[in-house]
Image 1 (cartoon, one colour):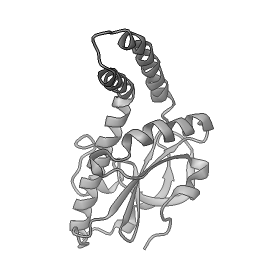
Image 2 (cartoon, helix red, strand yellow; image 1 turned 180 degrees about the vertical axis):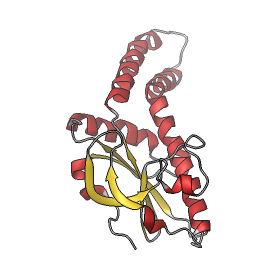
Image 3 (cartoon, one colour; image 1 turned 90 degrees about the vertical axis):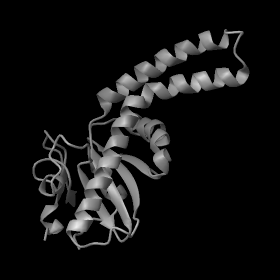
Image 4 (cartoon, helix red, strand yellow; image 1 turned 135 degrees about the vertical axis):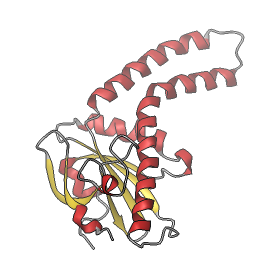
Length: 198
């Protein structure tokens, strides 16, 4: 039987030396649980780590989102430029104008939102298989949350914007993503659900 404590490791960003003293269960990559239980690296999107406490599972993704945020901002600015055309379209009702503006604004964040939704769904699939393989009940219906950990060099304004914009777009998706938080490695201890192995 798989002993998941073998995968309880220090949390670190891939491809850099930034590491936390805190630990969680490694889910992704060749050394992660997913690979061990049959999910090859390219089969399914998943987060890097997870932590658990009773019936709460926190999915943890370490990512440098600065470039992706710039792309979202550019698309968002482009969308705002399209608002004038929508406002000047006499054939649209006020309600239709509002719908079209909302759709344009959402489109700016769609690729980033979709990426995290795929990781969310894939990670839950891996964890449910893990529970079956370790004899844990799959019927406990845990509460899931998502923690996105950016590198320490990430400006606080970027963290705030990600919390506001991406968090708002992910919270409530599929009636599953309820609690999305964004922090940097330095402040991980304030956000990490649990940091001791059972």
